[in-house]
Length: 299
Image: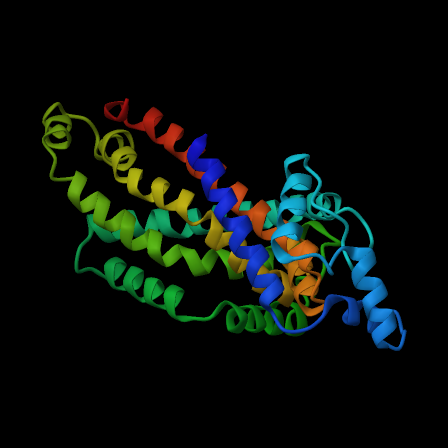
């Protein structure tokens, strides 16, 4: 619990400092967005009403005090509570991340297992090729390619938005393919290591079918590093979702954060980074607990 608070405090301090060191005046940007001529008097009046004229450390302490009361402030562009704006968009991002993880698992599990069982075969070469493409192809390029063929040419999927159940297919494929390559190689390496363990040889000596040996003894232990990496990649999933959500106009927190960056809505950006850090820390704690369930030795 102490580590959680220290991490969140550090993230809040760094984010708050960087947002206020960035060029541009939020008050001037807000006035221009409202169609008002940003005169010196108007900018100063708005800065005073927003509390931007106070020293930086005073602003941080006041903001941190509101955060401890679960108040992330009001968005400078929409005028609505930041917590409400983020929480209303979080389910869309969570659904996208879940579908991406499912796709990555469906792709990496069979390829990783086959590459380990049939070394130097076509399965192994195909898994290496897909892994290389996964880590090399940029998400925005793959997304544009899927949009062109899946939505424009074949007209099988919507171009953008979240209007139908199949709207998640293209963004989930884009996001999931980017992380699948790492898991293919990790599962292959884990399976090769586990298949040489004495308990696997003992299971085969007892006459168990090969499928039962692979699924019941080898795979369970080979997946432990992958589960650990998944917890660490939650932040990467949310970060990658920023590009994917913007490309596919997906109404999640990533797209909302990009819009806030363009508008220099530092209140939203601070809340977004803090929420992302909280999700990453809590997910890692949950993965640690799940890891202990799979591997009793960790207890």
